[in-house]
Amino acid sequence: MNLEKENLTHNELIERIFIEYRESDKAKYTSLFLSSFSNNKLSHRSGLAVFSIMQSFPKHSFTISEDSTPNKQLFDKMSDEDKEFVISRMPCKYCASLKQVNYRKDFILGCFLEIGGLIGTDIQNYYCYLSEANKLKVTQPTESDFRIFSEILTILLEADEKDTVKKTLQSKIDKIKGFKSNAEQRQALLETLGYSSILETDEHKGFLEYYTNFASAPKKTHSSDWNYPVDFWLGKDGINKEAFKFWFGEYSQLEKFWK
Image (cartoon, rainbow, N blue to C red; front, side, top):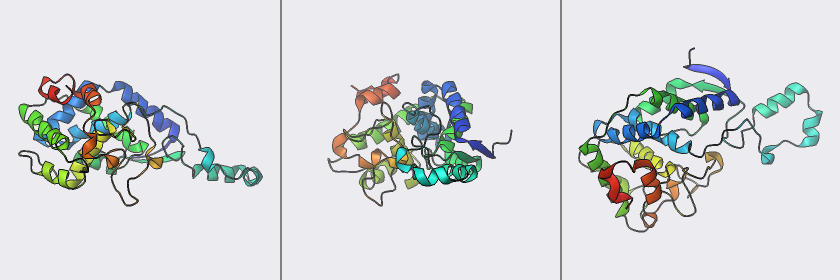
């Protein structure tokens, strides 16, 4: 089957996502994520973003939000063909996907290989990222990986109360010895720490226990291009130690960040 370009229904794609999710393994995803810091294999880092979201992502059928339901009187007068067209242009209330999905693997795969995290947050990305990450062989992190990740976490923990992840902290992370990255890749990394609930706030939670539809998630400012919830994170919010232990508790090299 050629999956470079394929027309799928929303429900077919959701089913494929959960097939891949059932075959995924947390230990493998965290090991790949950690190993990416020194070898700069961004494909190893990308999978954890979606795996984090899947912790609370609901298995569901295509459902239209009541807020977007068309006027009943007008809708009832439409032909079956017109009704189907109207429904086809409405997003699912759980994931914002349309009923029919034109799956394009080529562009999504490029982001998976080159960004190290999510660019788009639709279900096409979830399927591609999980299926590609599941194909990777486990790579164990090295001492350099633990050092780099520890330095990133230390920068976040030592941030001033009102610091965001968007300027000063990014600049400091960019200067870590042995860590090659550009601004887009650092943003994707920090957003992954948000999805995983490691970087969250009391009001704006990650996906470890709470699901938020990105399409309706709030933005800190109208012009912000950062994804929820790290968009709202400030230095005073620190690190969620319980979430950190959930993801990286098997690594004694990182235990100071959850104890």
